[in-house]
Image 1 (cartoon, rainbow, N blue to C red):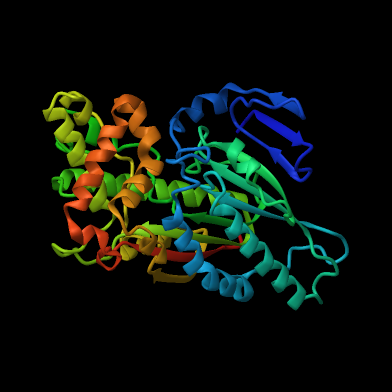
Image 2 (tube, rainbow, N blue to C red):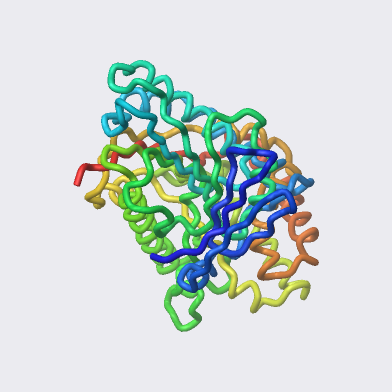
Length: 403
């Protein structure tokens, strides 16, 4: 598929360049090369939102301790997976090869950088342990991917001063191809595969049985809505796996950290992330009743998120003929214990959802919306006890089958 790229070679970080599938602004210290193709431009329209950029009060960089907890708890299992399952036989034994790693859903890098450091160090340890197979450690080439509207400026301005890899930005939706065939050795994705490529069409169609009038998510919605979300999620994961199967070398590994719900129903005194999204939706409905926003605006808005359960995800992956499941387990995210106040929980969700909500409802109502949410959280004490949150993380280590 034809694409157009902008590659920025910046003097501050000689190992850094940005490869993007739309236009880019380069500062005066950078040289820009741009080749255009209409194919990618048309397909890029789905990336119209991302996490809050920059480093301000409501930025993702300042409000992503919840996601950082996922990396901390997954560190030992990823390291063990690399040590036991990484196939390095394709690397040259006589010359320096390049080992290519992609992070799908990097945001502005706050949590991506420590994850990549851990992964590259684990790979180096594996290579040193099996040094008989190669004579030199390969150079690392790391591709940071996220939506087209992601704040890549903050990402690259935040790069650690000493990195052992060449960094490249690759904007674009990850449910489709982003790299040449068999060009990646390792793929990584944390806290991103709960995002759908778009809201299921039937949910937004007032003529459909799955029309989600009066709600903004599938939590507590009628069965047709839940099925529409589930079906779309299965389709998106299938597309993600097919794209990564084409891009990974035979024997390449992919580590996934997938936000999910437990298989059991939460009790009246416990909650999961979908519960919080539903509570945010109730604030939108309250504002519609007050005339602050229109009911029609609420009826035409749905969150493009789905939180799978372990068995559902396992069945989707098993239907793929390109990967073997090397390891799969449930992790409890310690990051949830960093959100112990109503304000912290409200700011965390604002960092994640504000740009998308602003696109639909306008920026002028955001303060009131999240103030309403904070008050509702504060009025429900069970939300402030981290032990009451039952959301889980599914860790999956996949290996690309040989063709």
